[in-house]
Length: 367
Image (cartoon, rainbow, N blue to C red; front, side, top):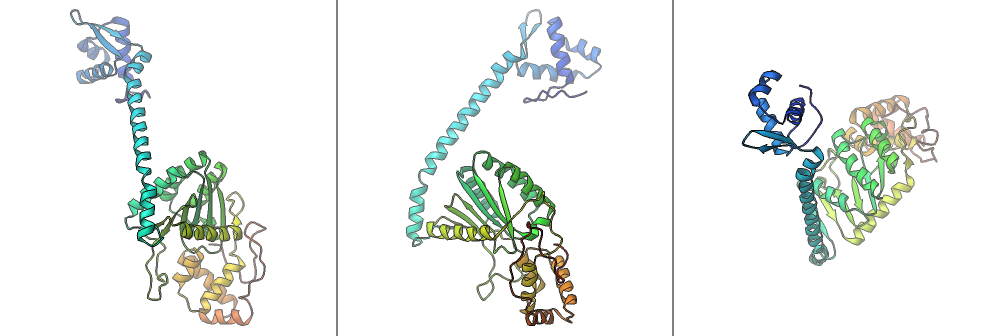
């Protein structure tokens, strides 16, 4: 039977409507007669009857002669739904009071952590699920501003879908959201859609050539930074995939203030990320020079790709194009030739949104 979109604890379909109308017209509910008239099973009619009784839409008004009475849907709603909504509101108020009571101990906890760690309030969380729960909790209580650095060429559609609802909610209550991506993210379709949607809602987005790592700052008081594997020199491992399942949550005012200044420097250097504008077809001169510099040091393709926030395959294509354009026989030789020709200097260049990046003779295809 065609389902009627009634909703409720048990879905009401056409059979429920027929039984309800039958009782309203006849004040009778003969299961056997209804079963024969409707051509359906006895259990279906009994189930429909029981659901209507549960929702207090029909009542047995006279047990002696089997007379039934229908109840107005408005009256039934007041009897069944309103008490449930009142209970939910009571539970929500209780949860909010408990949240406030627990939150009252945050200053005590933070003061103790600062004392124990000599002024540094840092929590290390190694469980990714817990990290995401803490991110959601900070998002829910964020009152003023969120600052984010996003390295790489884009985020997965699943992560963006989760972030979209969370970020929309913050923007709706007046929280300012500013995010800096790498230029490579401009070529990622899911990221373009996310940025376009949130821009319409009031979010602000820019992009730069290179972002050092992921960073999220809530209300300039709490920072989330990933924990990456380190090599022997204390630097990020060259084969680090750019993803970490652990995070450091920093609440120390001095460290947080430094992170805010770091974000501000990148924000001021970045170019507006407007996905409605045509995306550039060439990498920027700065990206080209960075690739050449890293080639001259003998850096692996994976390292170059990670620094530029692009895939290894795309990076290798750029390296191949640059090597051919310089007439070099190897990537290292291409870097040396570029240095001799002065191609590694940093002249003033046009940003991605100001007429597009410069398409020089050594520019390569977009990421």
